[in-house]
Length: 419
Length: 121
Image 1: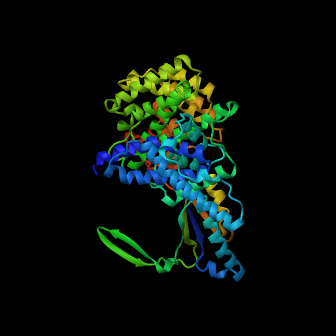
Image 2: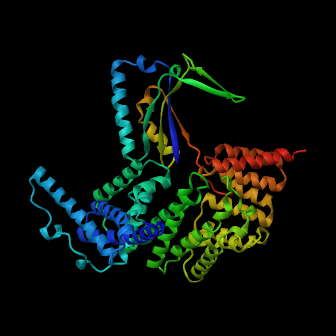
Image 3: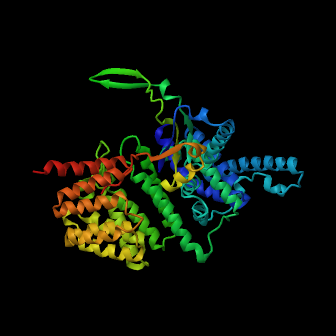
């Protein structure tokens, strides 16, 4: 088996995974059992196809193999039930026969969407939503997900099985949510994709390299959602935000894993095609779609992306976008970033004044980002002692090693510079 | 976010409990570990540590290792066991730990584990 054949098969399987699962769930119900059966079929294909070649109808092959596993499972489930309860068979016998690929129902585009809605159901915990989305829609194995999240495989297996149990118990249907709740539910789906992206993006080099695969997977899934919902501005906005953020990845950390702030990044390393695609997406969305927070965040990232040297950054434009973002989606993290942009236009004093409103906000009052931003502004204003104290306070409260190293570094520079 | 929960107790604290408390503690501890392992929040089980006096302390100075017995801190609270949690928040982690029977008799310290990931500023 060549590595190339293996990779091609893997791409194909990930693409087919939600389609096959959708078909099985529509045919048999029982999302929990169908999901297991599809995983087994994917595993069998991953072992066989690179050696023996991809079958002529790969989707039909997977559906047939998964259906056989599922009907075996249903049969033994049924036999068990019969033994235990001596209850009458609950499934008509023809449903227990594995159909051949010829019986295949026409592919429904909505299946992948319905699966995403199911996996990001608000009844599930966020950790379960992420794990289930990656497995059921992304076609990743439990082991791959566990490696990406740096937890034992058994833990991911527990999260997935609990999520499936909740879906079964609460009778969550496999269908698109009805109109009144669909917009809100789509927001949750997009948030899950955003969290998957972020989990991968924030990983620095070194031992966590595998986590960065999550970024590619999140972009792939968001592209799929965009293909299915081309009219939704926020889907386009999220995809643009991911592309524009991911474009900076080669410049955001040094080989030793230390972080490079946006202003100091070597912008020649940024991935230009990602920026171009992101800019085009967000420009189109902002022109004729209702405004939303992902579009605005993408627009801000696009302004940064278009500034070849950092000095060319159009800060007044960024301030204007943050003002809109604060109106559309007010939250203290937006206020913090807004303040940094204000400092670049009006100077650090005006920005420090804005921050004072956050001291009483329980959501950020003790957050290291507030201390870090304030220290940065104080440094700009020339108050080195207060800036140093702020960086050190931020370094104490962050739980990220690269951030702590960065903040301690800034504090040390201020000490060394003192006369 | 990952957290380490560390159980602190005086040496001999377990023996000092009544038999009823000891038995309750044992069965509750097993149940506690199982409940939160099943919820996907407690990672890899719990580790009870032998008395500190059975361990060694290693120091390398100028390339020369010095290995000493102990520590023997007879009366001081020492690390008696630990486990790893992976939860949405510190609030959730402390909520879980309130169910740990060790927290009822002694004290359990919950500390965030530093993450290798980070956001550039």
